[in-house]
Length: 171
Image (cartoon, rainbow, N blue to C red):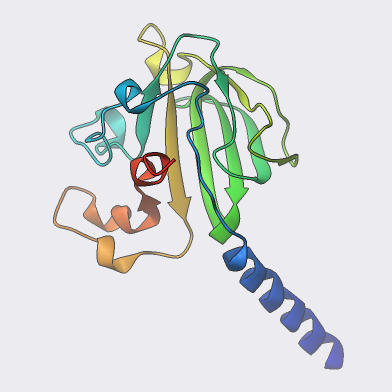
């Protein structure tokens, strides 16, 4: 019984520490600025198979370096159908940072990264093949932000996504 209490306390402390670590987000595409993305694109619809656009597309020349927007742990670095070459990073506040459509991946699963590391390069992989190269960047949370629910299409899903534009524009 004592062992369970210790394990529960450790888990609780780990969870709390995850929320305390500062996020300090920055632009993930090296050299990009406000002119390289549409500040109205978050939750824009209609947007293909995903119905609503759950992130921001940051346009850049193919091969431009992508850095993590925050420090974290790479949970997945590989390829999926829609996102193409993708990297998923677990960052502070238990938020997932999703980087999609990469040309190249320069990191590996279960790697610790900081903002100076390279995740990969801008590309047009996945369902954007043949279109302008860009990075699709999303921030997802496990803890729902219930107040973000709205009447839009898929509005209930909006409570699990944060608008990355709000964070990268602060940079």
